[in-house]
Image (cartoon, rainbow, N blue to C red):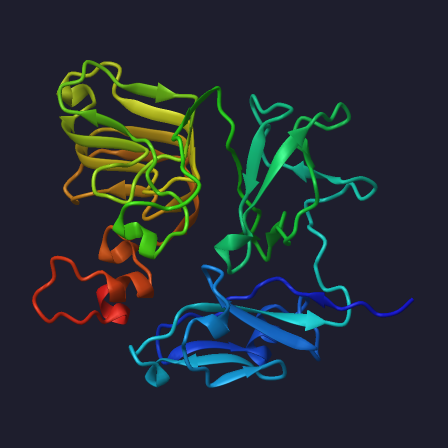
Length: 353
């Protein structure tokens, strides 16, 4: 049987901070010794947004299958490279089999969970976190019926694309987090097929104008539980999937009994954060999964907020957003100068980090 060539997964060992983005083959071999071949047949590079390297207009110091990929900041017109990832074409099968998979005879996998999954059922959707350097290796699966599974096992449809570590390594718990996305109540924004009508379209090809849930001062009681929020939030200030805005004390100190809470939520595929707490004290945020969001997922806005508790929450695949300098990637930092002083030229390495 002849040897087949196959592309590896994408690797992103370095970023543009410092002198530039260095994705050298020797360094990648050290970081990922079991997942790269010794003599690649080809190399590809792209930005984290999926733009091929040769379409960015940037200059590359090295772009060679035997050396790797190097973009130097000093060689760019604007003084900084994009953040790139690379993959290699190898002459043998290099994709690892996920450690969570013990069913190799059918198109499904069995996950061994540390805790019994209370209330998870056939048809629900879950996300398994990345256990690698790239957050983009998080994967979603649908739960299948499994009469033979133990109380701590679930069967899911399909095979993992990436390796997800399922054990402790040298005393360090490296196991992938698993989050339930499906909940009893679904609140979902109605989306258009493409981006439209605002400045965000310079950075996103998809519609970023979702719904939002906002609690403002003077409410009698707010208790949100068992809700799935999808396609929520907007790329504009003050419009977030769950937003407590200038409420003051919302626990016993403010006269709320029982205290205000949001718990057992999933907030995913959203367009501006997950839970924002602004000018609000004593809020309980518990058992919340925040996944695939733009901008800081769990966010206390001004800093003086007090007694807010984030208990057993999971945030993963949190991507760049336009709203604040600390949300932005280098391209957003260069292009967004509204409200800056006249003649301002962004320096991404110091302004947006």
